[in-house]
Image (tube, rainbow, N blue to C red):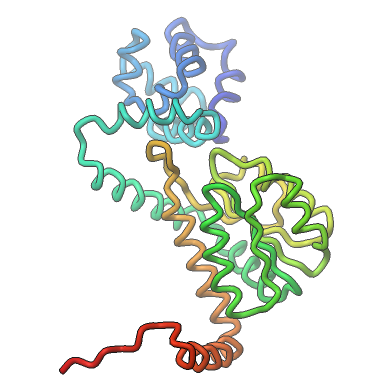
Length: 289
């Protein structure tokens, strides 16, 4: 079953019963609310039984209502405006403990990322980065910190690492105009998907570079132009999208790349330790009396 609930609704519409049509109409018109309702709540809202809602999910090809609800949430994330996001999450929070809610949500995103990640694609991405002449890292707006974090550590391994966080398409193209064969491009894109990253990544792919896309879905614009797609789940929390799982995946990339280039990394870090010590970059350890 594909993730696009709206395509499934359109395909099945001719055979829907009267009650099923009411469910489909509500999901289509009020998707920002429907995606976060229980089966019982959705049934009560449209005037059908909970069992009718569950059967409707199965008719669409899902193995149950939780699967359909998850597909709805993943599909609509990029459709919600900032105002809609705030409205949805305010209703979800209610009287719940916000800290526990966010931490539990992050833990779920980490678990789902572990289950969804293609290990072969991950290994191929690591090899492409290690072998690259130059590495470009694209991340704008809320994903800029991910790009900077990855770039910070990759620069311990290579002098040819370029971090591109320009939010405008024209400025991004100025930074990547020289990209070509033998280069690796690591790009980040999560809902709401940035058109700038998609355009930049498509350009890099066309120029012959290996594009590694870190995104949340095979259906995302970035996935369409990536040589390797690394999926990290990003749950919606009010105005923000959780970057806990994407950052954890970045950590995994750094660890794997460091393991491949351990001897070179050791030499560079040894040289840096002397520089840091000579120039008091870090606080000296204070011995306890």
